[in-house]
Length: 604
Image 1: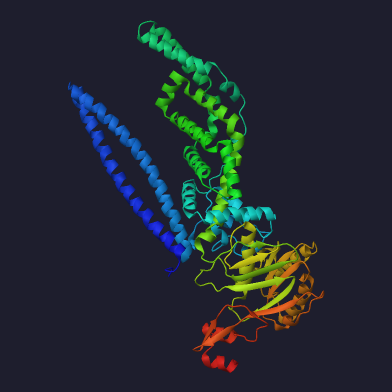
Image 2: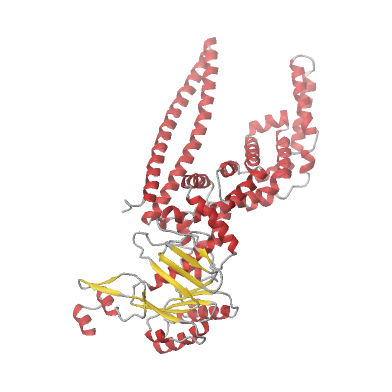
């Protein structure tokens, strides 16, 4: 199916390669498990022999204990490698899914991001099942998901923002291996991982934490206690005095316990996530970027020492986690005031780095958006970055096809629209609606900074308005026709601002009778044909093809049509100039089994 696609072959080869690596790591893990078991048993038997008086047994027991500890440490690192390898394999598999249509089964479809007051999102399949978001999204964090959702907008952002993202996405498309590594690392974060609460807690310094950080007591008293124990061991101090000092230190630890726990609360369950952020930041810091946009993001991480700061915070979180073991808690706080030291270290970290963490997290969120937008270039053979033009409304394209249709099945079409209206006619199922969606959804991709599926694509900034998938709302007493009226009213009201618009209306006023539909459509279109509007309307009413503009703007016609082959209806899905001259309702009725061949001939 995809034998001729170099990009498909790249991901297929990478998948089989990484899958073989995963299997090798699993075999290595099995061997380490066996070695751990054997070394543990030998350690037990050796210590048992030592207990029976065999000195060599005790020596071997210590050696096997060291071997067991080394194997446990190595196995722990190997399990991390396996997790990363499995993540990388899953990421590559997700790219393969985008070639064969299985991407429509991705769990992250952005349906929860859809806004009720933005019908363009449902009309253009921006969110939900089989949507732009579902195809593109590589975001794992909640901030990244929301940022990507905000990028897929019907409202044109600033030109500089679009160009900056285009520049970054273009470079990432040329670095597929880096993209795979970053996405694999990001995938190890919990799905929809939300750092909002953590950032707020870190940016709010608890009362008294600075006093703990600067307290000389917690720095010097543990040294006094340890010294007293050493002196007691050598008979230079009574054990009673050493014991009293040790007991006093434990009571001191308990006195600060509640305050320490309050200070350390943000680190309660973040060990894994912080390690992943540390590696992600280091990966970005060490990457070889050439584009201005990516280098700027990279420099902001380097200037703040993001990788090193996160390493310190992750190590601190590991130490805090050790204190949750009851035996370690009692011993470490009795001898070292452990929790006090960790609270002091965390307070110092907050003072030096907490203010930068929000910016660093936002940089990764932006990277998630850029990685998602680069998916188009990774999976499509034909793509281009839209040209942003200035001046009068304009939208032009060469060999444009929809992103959400398989590249081998999609039929490309051209576009060349300026201010005015184009009436699009054609038989049922001929491709009119798909054409409207391809144009408008490509504009959404253009505003996000993504490439579009075309040989060339250019447009001026246009506010996108659509009336394509209009539904009734019985709970509010709104019929389909009235719902469409509300959509058209919104367009008319916005047009009074004289802001550039791209208006896409599918089968205008289809919810009413033909006489009212034609009259209503003509009146609505006269109000939507403006020097700042590109208005595209599909219809089955040929009377609209003779519509004249009230302000000398062009009203053109184009159409899609069917043809017949071996007695069957066929479509080429190609836009042609002029109005349609054919209809196909009776043939579709026959195809659906509603009419017989004889009845169809009688209708003809």
